[in-house]
Image (cartoon, rainbow, N blue to C red; front, side, top):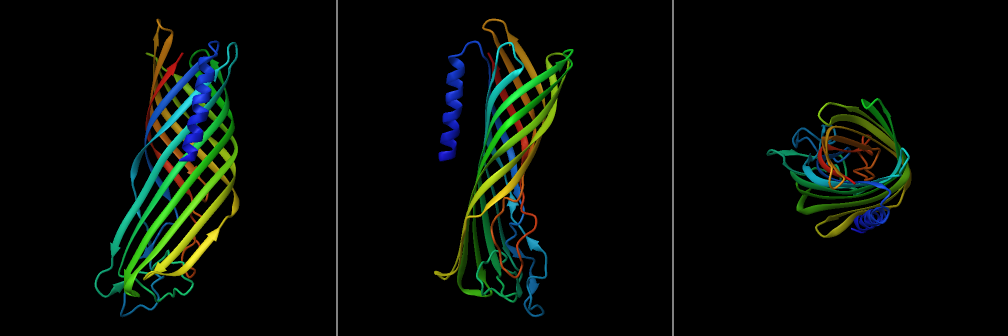
Length: 318
C-alpha cells in the first residue's frame, strides 16, 4: 500500500508542476490492463503414485497451480520541453496476479508435498489431497528521459534512459491432508517481499499510417540491485515443524516488449489532442521466486516471473 501511495504522490507532483508550467507540452495517459502472471517453481505436489508399489513419491512430474487473468492499470505522465526533442516522464504499473489449484489423488495413491520445508520430510511421505493459492502484488515505477527522432512524417524512433524501481509481494498458502498427514492438516505459509532499483534503457519505433493511425513496437531492459525478505513456515496439527527467514540481496534483470495501434484526433479549440491506444505487453523479471521447497527435490531452476496481456489506453496531449 505504501508503494502505491509513493507512486501517487510522485504522479500528482509531476502533473501539478506541468499545470504551473504552460510552456511544457503535457501527455497524460491512463491504461486498463488485462494481464496474466506466471512464475516458475511454484509446483506444490507430484503426480500421484500407487501406495502399494511406490516408496519414493518424488520420481513423478510436478504439478503447479493455474494462473488467472486479472485487471490492472498503468498511469503515465510525460512533459516535453519547448524547442527540444527531449521529455521527462513517469510510468507507473500496478498489477495484482493470482493462481490456485486443488488436487486429490485417486484411491490408494499418494502425492509428494513439494513445498514442505520440514527437514524431516522423506521421499516416502505423501498426501492424498492438497490445495494451493499464490498471490502477487506488483508496482513498477519508471522515471525516464525520453527523446524522439522523426523522418519525413513517416517514421519515428523513440529512445529512453532512466531508472526503474520494482516492488513485488508474493504469498503462498498450501494445505496437505491425508496419507502421512492423517492426524491433521499440514499448513505451509510463504511470504516474499522484493524491492529493486536500477538503470533502464529502451527503444520504440513508430510507423505513421494514413487517417491519423500509427503502429509501434519496441521494448526495454533494466538491471536491478534488489533486496528480498523471505519468510516461510510449516505447521502440522498446530505444531511448527519448519521455519525459514532470509534476507538475501541479489542482482536481477528485467526485459519487456510491447506493440500496438494508435489513433489520434486534434481538437482546434481548445488546443487538445486525444490519442487512443490498443496493444499487447510482455514483461519478464529474472529469478523472482526466492522460496525454498522440500530439500529432497532441490531448489527449482526456472523461477522467473512473467507478466503479459493486452491494454487499452486513453492519452490527452495539451
